[in-house]
Length: 240
Image (cartoon, rainbow, N blue to C red; front, side):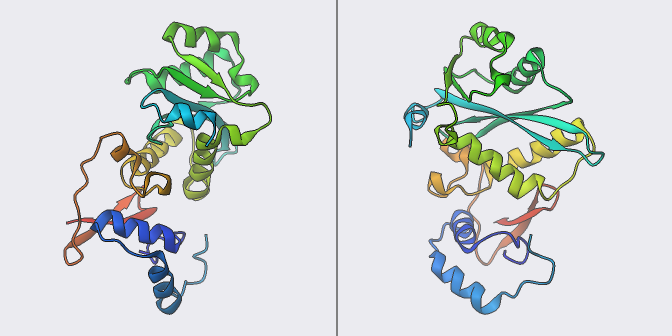
């Protein structure tokens, strides 16, 4: 697994093995095995008040925006919405160029269009979430906005950590041409993150299992296959 996923640490590998094969593996065992047998090839390096609300199932989602650059150096804004209870990614929306009130509303509405709206939505104090149309849109959807503490990123920890994960584990390693290409690649990461990526904050379970959504089968050590995710960026063992 380490050779196929050089960025995985021993904790992640131990958690992933435990998830897939339903066998408890101590992280120190994995660390010793890697120290003895793994030699990387050259070039392979690559609870707050919101927490309290988030533990009320399906009551609180978080939304945030971040920016990234395409291969032709054009700026794209990405909106990500996540469920704080299950840590599940609800969806992504992409916008090329400058943002305004109508654009932010369109992005949010496109994400929640096929799902039930939450009771509360956590957002930071970015001016992009201060637009009059943004607030009016939430009133129409009957969603109560919960603002984080100004200038305190730790008051909005889950979605900030998620954005960091998306950048480190995915966008820093893949490129895209335009908005449609970026949306397609983010959907691949969303599927991998929700269904197969272990999450230490969820006792090593993927977010979908916290939400009661699972089709995962337990793999056997003597009978498994390698499953590729995100167009081959990650390869994890799965039931044959």
